[in-house]
Every structure is written in structure tokens, then in C-alpha cells.
Amino acid sequence: QVQLVESGGGLVQAGDSLRLSCAASTRAFSSYAMGWFRQAPGKEREFVAAIDWSGGRTEHSASVKGRFVISRDNAKSTVSLLMNSLRAEDTAVYYCTADGNFYRMARYHNYDYWGQGTQVTVSS
Image (cartoon, rainbow, N blue to C red):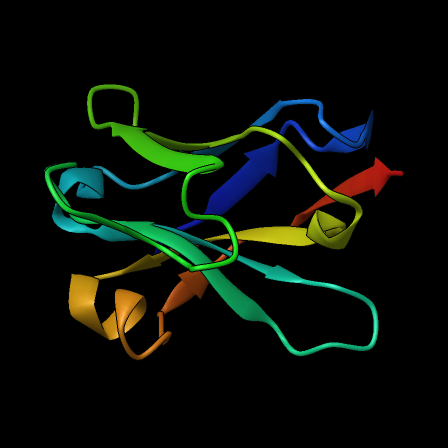
């Protein structure tokens, strides 16, 4: 069982930057691919970014590529999402996710574990 706790959400203005963090409660953190998904009101949850166990492979959705960067620190069992040039359409609840298979998360958007989410609101 993996417990994930997100932090760092808030209210920002368009063009601002924000960093989300996720702390995982597992000793096997380095064996998991980690990711971020988001869900806006009235919309389905969508893939944002994923990173493999080593941090050497990442994928970002087309809507955030070039603006968001996912990273991880295996020594601290954390994963982060740096969000730059935020837009109103980035407003959503952001969820940290974990899965044993990077491609299952990055390509098929499936995962075994997720956190409670953190709200990001971007005012235009």
C-alpha cells in the first residue's frame, strides 16, 4: 500500500509559477513510476506528466509540455511538478499517482495509487 500526500496548491494569477509536491509513504518509492493527473470541474481526469523510477524518463501531456516539469527525489520519496506560465485552463484538482509500470501510467493512463488531490486555481 502506498499513501500519497500532495501539497503546494493555491490561487495564482495567469503567468505565475507554482510547484506541487507529493510525499509517498513507502520504502519502495524508487521502484514506482510517479505521475500527476488533474481534473477540472465537469471534466474527466486527464494525464499531466509521468516519471519513471530513476527519473531518467519523463512524459508530459501536449497541453503542458514546455511549461510543466516533473521531477523526483528518491532519497526523500517525493515527486514534484513545477508549473510555469500558468493559464486559466490549468485550473483543476491535481492528483499525485503511483504505479509499478511507467508505460501503464504514461501511455495508458492507469495507476494503482493516488492521493487526495490539491486545488490549483489560476485567475485570468
